[in-house]
Image (cartoon, rainbow, N blue to C red; front, side, top):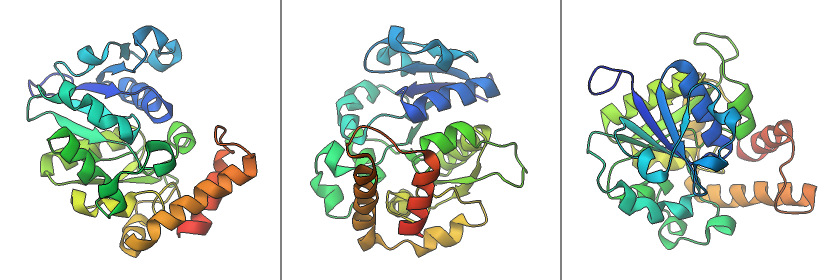
Length: 255
């Protein structure tokens, strides 16, 4: 429910692989969802809006919402900080991004070890929750299951604010996945690329041990090995291999 007791209003910035599934699943579940991208509402495919989501401008997406989900490349987040300045403090902001230096250009603070979402929080000047970053887009689109299903996989959620964490976990559950409390934002490096929980499709029982097993110093090398293996397989940097290959690769490298 929203702050007024009505249906919760969710704004989503980004209609890429993760963003479009968020729009479909949250609107299907009954949330009031609006989505914006950088190219304008007319460029958002009708299939994304099939369950009631609305395509709007970026300015409209951040107005009168209870939750704002950021599903855009990490290096673009500082660009939108000014757009978020007027958001009420009680709006829950959820970051789904990941840092890939070959795409985002090198960010010195993250290279020095700052957790990615701590950096995001500093750029935006407000607290964020971290969710949906550690699941592949194909798994997210296809593998959602009802609560209690024996094959339901899980997604870690980190946040400093208890309310932010609870809201983010509830939304994760409503997209078809178990939510696992991954602790404060300072520990969210445990769900970054290269970690045992990153795109390995683990269950809620498996994730706590995987989070605990993460080795911070090894994440960048493992992340880059995964990228190199994908690029070598395809021979270019623009295509994606099938989802099964990616999960097998990440399990081999990260677990």
